[in-house]
Image (cartoon, rainbow, N blue to C red; front, side, top):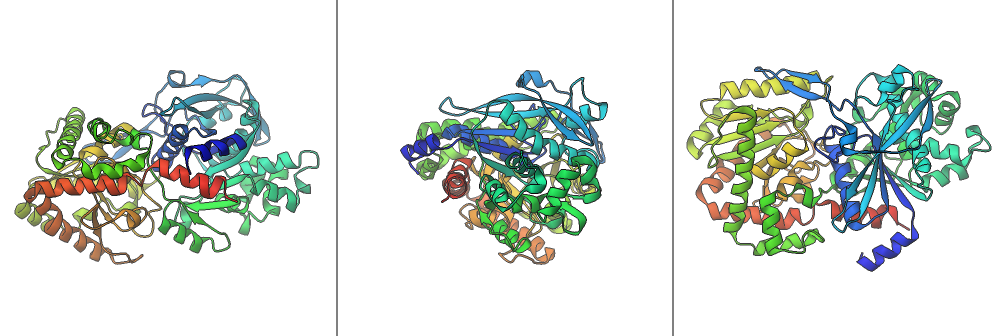
Length: 571
């Protein structure tokens, strides 16, 4: 799609409203928990770069997700975040009201403007219920991201869906022609749209034409490849929270099977286009929901945001058009290997300086450094590297020093995830004479940028097929950092053995973890470490090809073009 075609499309369409439970736009704004929110922010940044008429909608979270504190044993505790919305956001005048639990809840919005590379701006609205006229329980509704019990979660999702639709109108976005739901949390916006269609007749009178009109306005992106990850609420809770009329409308549309409101089913039922976030994830989603046509648009990261300062300067010098057209990163193959290595050395120095500032630890800039930074939860298996400590020690003794930097939060209620962090701490203690292991607390966007650019290899060890996409390895690729990863999510598409990194295991969906552990050690021992320590230019050439192959493709610019062609303007 060329620039003229894009402009013609923009002239013919109204606003695309992008709804997401979390959106990460600034490291200092704790309005995101992890990959879902960071992807949402990257999506909106790409929209601003391309000049698309998009508006983001989410909640404010005055107390954030949480501050993470880790004691000497790796035990995580959570603390509220203190931040000032008025430091980053502009309060908007309109007030709307949403009825929850039988009482009206007043809502206002704060606005953040995402600036594109061509001075274009995309507004993002953060809904806030901390208003004096509200009941105390309602004032705290927008305090914590993913906090509270099922009732609180349902009220938050109702606020996003019903409140978001109403707020867009109050703010003057009269020509919203498409609603893009980023995961199922915002699926109640479909019922809000159905209410608008039947305003004079009542929801109970909704017919097939009304439902089809709503479907024509809705796009749904699903991110969760396991049934347990989809939000579900008992019908007995839906009735008092949403009211009997709305609850009956949801039930009448077949979205409460077995007496449970499944937010993914609701979004699927009312969307004309649905996609997974990687080719493999699309396959998994079609198996999970066989009655719906589910496409695939593989995620991408915002190139400019996630490229470190040294690599930005390098690309600006050799590939001056890369900011406007990320596909030009294919020309990274012409950059001298020595300059790639020098830029990486600078990025690594910045990371190690931050590690020292946070922990007092002085890591060796010449030592091979692995990075692993993900949400701490069982399927991501951060402990896989330590399944055979004796073998790991032997590899390090023979091949050269290894140091590993970990980061990531566990959800406050995920006790096994918390224990995984403690396991890493125990491994660090038991291996301290052979391998240097650092676990950094408070993983956020700022730390992610340093980590993805500064380590030598990015490690990812999910249990297949539970990785919907993953984007941390894409961020690493923007900085020439290859991946050593299980073949799941995006890596099935991005992996070219010895060119963009290395695979752990094979392409089979399920395989014993013992095979993967053996594969992980064999790759470190036989390929990765010998290349790093024995063939400096060879490792530099692999970094360069990682940029050219994966940096040029797995970016949010390409992703947004695919949404434009395949979802927003599909005929």
